Image (cartoon, rainbow, N blue to C red; front, top):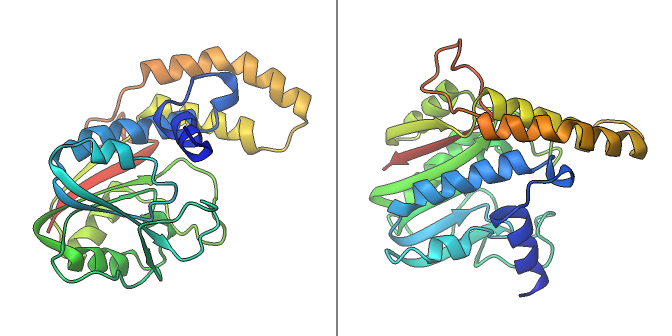
Length: 241
């Protein structure tokens, strides 16, 4: 297994739960669970927009209903090094014909667009009638890929943007509830906040049992009501053309 495959395995598909992974475990495992659930219904040609390392490629291609996976990303992004996408774009126009793709996925992508409806309409253009769109977005997360970090969506703003872009049958789910969101904040604090190395190491081991408890006892919100069901770590959305 090559270095990229090893990295994908350790960081996306089988990340171990240990003090050193607290910064990313909560978000990566929640996204992976969502991808596994939501892409079971994928079929035909699948376009992965903003594919990066293409960590979910093998998972998508293992679905016998999927005939072709196409990973698409920018010409020279800063985050996947020498990994080349199958298809390159300029971030605005997808170089595919109208009604040419059966399913589109976009994990942790829409938060980077100042005009989300513009890119959602472009994705809608290449989807076949009845085609499926699936995406995830963060909610509890630090600034990243600066300065291209634009939004943290609520369920209502995300639904509005999709509806305005022409999508129907929109369904939005929480990737994690109160406990996972709290665990995620602890992991981010331990990973990125200003503290010396010794303090960071000690706190990682002291807080690790509590972090594990939060992850193991998390309950996803049942709808969004502004009270008990008012906090989430991130969102997933599915919609049809």
